[in-house]
Length: 247
Ligand code: F6R
Image 1 (cartoon, rainbow, N blue to C red):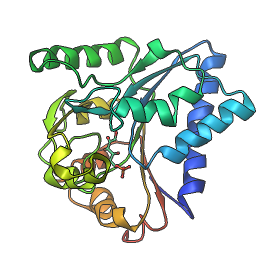
Image 2 (tube, helix red, strand yellow; image 1 turned 120 degrees about the vertical axis):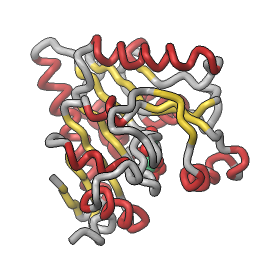
Image 3 (spheres, helix red, strand yellow; image 1 turned 30 degrees about the horizontal axis):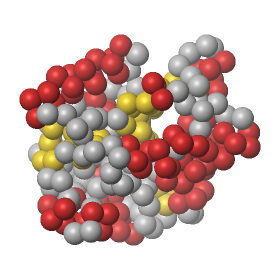
């Protein structure tokens, strides 16, 4: 289903509310919640609302385990552009999550150790019973995570090459495209698909053309997000501008 909100703010509050309700429901039963998290500008207000709920309403993340979608490769966790830094600044530093429960692909691995790391990432998710909820943004190439055009629907966590457009879109963060890493470690389309609930968010008219393709276009590896049309547990959460080209 597609849900359209007047503003990014309203949509973000609704998504944060769903995440909080899931955490509370599972915590009451003594269960952990396993969340798949995204970086980028799209989820920032969702995280801000979760932080507010933690500070003002006592929402606890003690029973939450997180797996981030991706990380640039190579990347030092202390770098300002790393997704570790992003998650710390936008969420983890402000909530009561146990740092041992936080998982982000490791951008410091030696190339020969990447494959084993990726297999273990999958195993860790599976051993916890799978992802309860995965949140996603979408890139202008149609990528989810860093699954660029050409990604297979059953792909797992792996090292990938970033699309040229993705690197252009990241160039501001790196002070020039030449500084943007050419590779990343990302969960696969298959990894994302196994989540029990998937929420893909998009804001602003800049995302309207790719949202039209993702939601209404032919299912194809050329636009990896179109694979989500095959799932019966995905919600596209949009603001009016991102939804403006939908028929
Ligand atoms: C981030 C990720 C990417 C972004 C996408 C949109 O972890 O996996 O797929 O969600 O590139 O980025 P923003 O939100 O910055 O427009």
